[in-house]
Length: 221
Image (cartoon, rainbow, N blue to C red; front, side, top):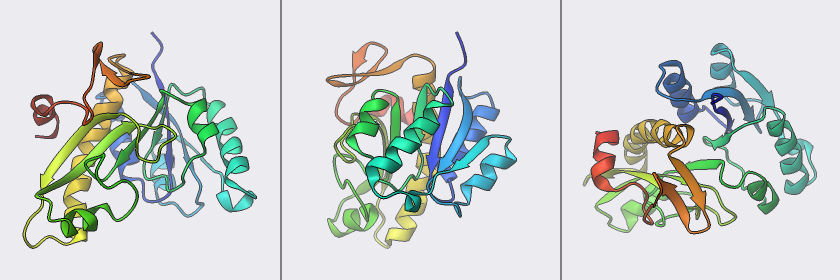
């Protein structure tokens, strides 16, 4: 079977992108990152990808009149790389329904909360303000609903009494860098798919929160 082709979309430093590139280089992914796209020409992750020998391309959203035309142009350039999976790694654009449908079942995102809690922004402060005992991150398939696609895997961290949004974000990010390569590898190995009911792993429908805790402990440590 051909090695799955991965395309990553970023808007900033690309730390999750870098974790995926490292995992691929280390042989921990049965997939190859073939291109990295950014909607921002100043995204720091572009230099990291280029240094790793990966093709990079900027499609600046400011050059387009609306989201629809930007997404259409982006999708065309992504398709040129024949991706098996498109990975959002800090891509700070809300994608149109037509874009999402085009890559349905092969479009993945990571969100810094325990979905379905706290979709959108300011997730860490919202968790602290709510008095939650834990926070975390969720890798999920992307659907038309913002941060509402089927969960694949979650990682959890305790919220400490003296936590700020910044300190909590730092610990959650460390979990993200382990969760994302794990989820992508599940897809690349053929174990993970998506159907109308949600995410499917090894032929079994996953629950709302994704991979169960016993499995997660072996991933997130």
